[in-house]
Length: 255
Ligand code: SF4
Ligand code: SF4
Image (cartoon, rainbow, N blue to C red; front, side, top):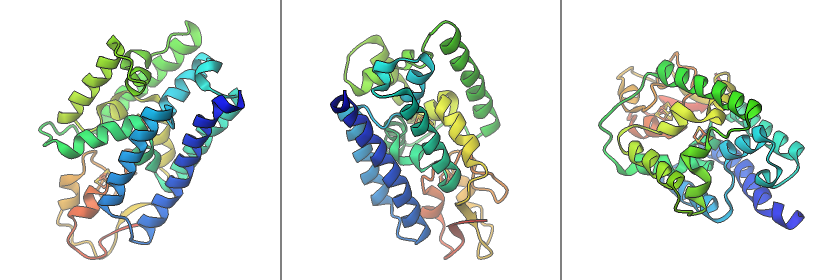
C-alpha cells in the first residue's frame, strides 16, 4: 500500500517545494520565462508518469470518496488539498500556474498559439465556474457522479484512448483560441484556489515607478493586471512582467 502511495507523495512534495521556489525566484527578481517553460515541461512529465500532482482529480476522488483513486488515506488527501490552498493564499496561484498538469497542458498550448478570442471577463468565467463547483459537489455527494470524468483528465494523462481522452484533446484545442478554458470555466479546485488567492499575501503589484502605459493590462489574458485587481485569476504567467519596459514598475511583493 505504501509503495502505491509513493507517486502521489512524490508529486505532492514536488508541488510544495516548487511553489515556494517559484515565489522566492519571483520575489528576488530571478524568475525567467525559461524557468517557467522548464517547469511546465517537468509538470507535464509528472502528469503522464505518475498522474500527480493533479489536485482537481484528487478533489474529484475525495468528493466521490474513492479511496483507490485517491491513492492514500482520506485525511492525507484533505490535508494535501488544504495545504495547496494555503500556499495559494500566501504566494498566489503558482500551483495552478506551473504545477498542475492540467493547467500546464493548457498553458503550454497557449504559449505556442496566437490567441484570437480574448475572453477576459473574469466575472463571467468565475460565475460559470462557481455554478460548476456547486454542481460538482451536488453530483458527487448525492448520486456519486464525477462531474470531471467526462473531461478525461485521467484518461489523457494515462494515455487511455477513450471518448473522455478525446474530450480533453477538445479542451486543448479550445485552449488554442481561449486562455485556459478548463481552469477558468470548469475547474472546481481552481474556483477554491481563486478564492484563496484573492487576499494572497504576495502578489504582482504595480509600483510608484509604473507610468500607466497599460501594456500589462493589454497582454494579461485574465484581466488581472489593473491596479485594483485582486489577482484571484492571476496564474502568475509573467506576461505582464515580460512586456513591461519600465524598470521596477511591477513587483511581486506584499501590498
Ligand atoms: S484551475 Fe484547476 S486545472 Fe487549472 S491549473 Fe488550477 S487546479 Fe489545475
Ligand atoms: S499577465 Fe500578469 S497579472 Fe495577468 S495573469 Fe499573467 S502574471 Fe497575472
